[in-house]
Amino acid sequence: MPDYSREKEHGGRVAGVDEVGRGPLAGPVVAAAVMFLRGVPDDLAGRLDDSKKLRPALRERAFADLHASPSILIGVAAASVTEIERHNILRAAHLAMQRAVARLSRRPELVLVDGNAAPDFGCPAQCVVGGDSRCLSIAAASIVAKVIRDRLMTRLSLRWPGYGWERNAGYGTPAHRAALRAGGITPHHRAAFGTVRQLVLSTSPHSPENAEQPSC
Image (cartoon, rainbow, N blue to C red; front, side, top):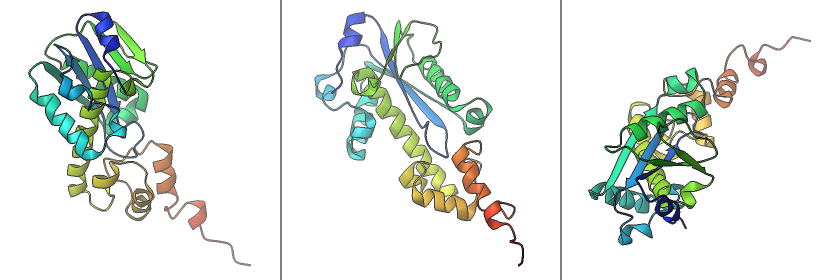
């Protein structure tokens, strides 16, 4: 379970940052930054963890409680599919992280980042591998980013039905891949991703498996 030891050790304003959405075939990458101004409320600390480990109802409850507290600052930002394809997914994730930190109403003195690489936040940063399972501020950020992105993909699914984004959040599930083969890509698909290219090419009339075979 995550704890607050790294934040306490610093003793100043510490923001935890995490992103969600590096792996999906569709949709933006979303990042959140969370800073506890007066420590983590006791009734909340035990409910914060890596967002992937929490059931949706528990994530939603923690998300609501994080936003309800006036002593918890939250910044959320995204990098678009266009930016993912213009740069690469790592650079796009870093852009989203930088924007999320910039949207905090108070500047942090230290940023704790989930992972092994951090962008320039204009202040010191510390990478924490597996940070969403080790640091409460990063765990909180992972929950916020996950809930925001899942809600976004659900809204997009209403405009682009058939891909199951309300269930798979854009990840490459068998049903999503089948829908890509049947319906092709949308403006929200990451066309530069190898998996997306291969799925689209496999349905092209000019692809090898669909090419006309020579007669005997």
